[in-house]
Length: 131
Image (cartoon, rainbow, N blue to C red; front, side, top):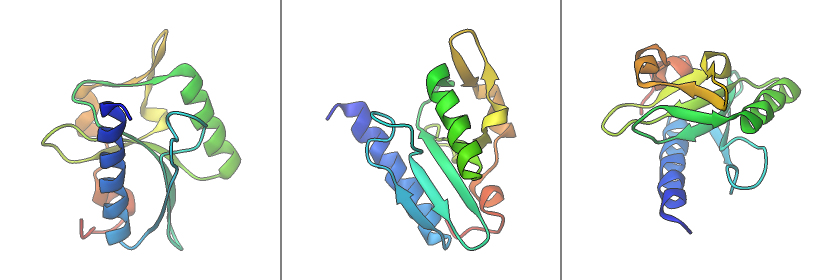
């Protein structure tokens, strides 16, 4: 496996553990970013549900137009809100609904200036999280 996949998988597992520790059940889709149109994580409780696309990049997060369309379609079909989770080195996870990404000619983007507008983990799960 390439290094970037291993790094990405490690961040997905970290996020999965955080959600589980906060009381959620989590389904992690193997190879979601490589083959398929499923989210990286599907996070469930009796009262909250979300789909998560996780990114661990220090610069802006870009989502290709085709992938973004798949994410919108998944959200529409499932009725489950879809978020981009962004982890910047030495900073906490931030979560962005798909509507927060800005369209560019080649992709959709969330930039470093947007980090402060992203939801924290506690804000996303709707309670003071343990993680």
